[in-house]
Image 1: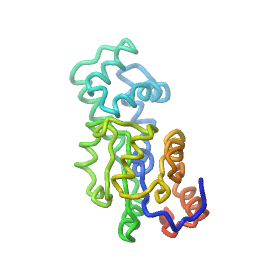
Image 2 (image 1 turned 60 degrees about the horizontal axis):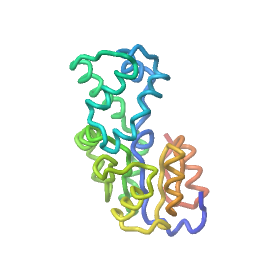
Image 3 (image 1 turned 30 degrees about the horizontal axis):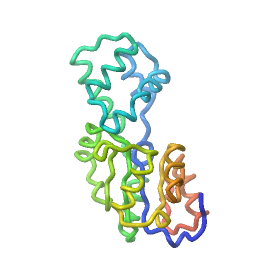
Image 4 (image 1 turned 60 degrees about the vertical axis):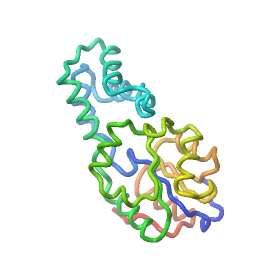
Amino acid sequence: MDRSNPSKIKAVILDYGEVLCYPPTAQEMGRMGAPFGMDPIPFRKLWERDRLRYDRGDLSPEAYWSALAKDTGTQLTPEQVARLRQWDLEMWGHDNPAMVAWLRQLHSMGVKTGLLSNMPHEMVRYVRQQFTWLDQFDHLTFSAEVSLIKPDAAIYEHSLRGVGVAASEALFIDDKEPNVQGARAVGIRAIRFQSIEQLRSELRELGFPFLPADQ
């Protein structure tokens, strides 16, 4: 992370999954894996395999779940597919109050805020319906809506245009290292999120004045 000139940061751009929301539990992944006869850890790997194509909007929900069924030799009923789609939404729907409170703090202090998330159309609709705090963002970039995914350079550039700052004036926070590296490749300072405590520490080292509260 580049620690020079923290005062130049005019915008904070946040990922959604596992940053603004908690990660899915093993129980939630296990529930989804059960129709495929899979335990949570191997199912998560299968779930992730075509996820970027789904997030970019290349696959419909039906095509995504059909591919998982084909890969595992599973026959899914329409009712099972409907349940899987709903469970998929619900397991990403547990927002992190501490991070949402920090988002509100940033917004209230005049820091520009952006959301930059790899997310399929169904999840975009769900998040828009569920969370009124989305109004704390100056700009929202969802992969399915722009047909781009992290870590493609173009999606970071789209987000920068949306919040109206140069790359050198932005700070990006994401839980995945490839996405963090993608941001750095276009000149954005970036932190990989692992915990509130770790984020506070790295922001303090950076000299950024607004820190998330202790949990």
